Length: 100
Image (tube, rainbow, N blue to C red; front, side, top):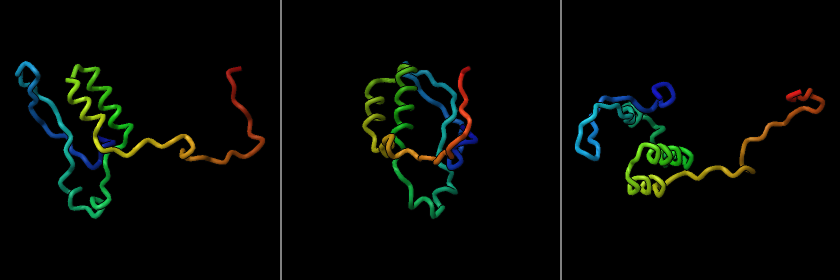
């Protein structure tokens, strides 16, 4: 995560579980320098795929449904439709790789 989330920094934190137990953890927060960047003007809601992954993880770890619903109903950028995927022209006559 540290390598792929360049606009975020990992910070130490303390979480409290549903039973009131405190747990040391890490959180990712947007880097203060990012807020000064002119790119901040182009900030957009998270991608639908990212929110789906967050919801899947929350379900796996037993997070309350109320929070999962919040994730799933969060403003988002919709997934691309297959017809919107990037396409690459493949030259004719290239060899084919098969299991055989």
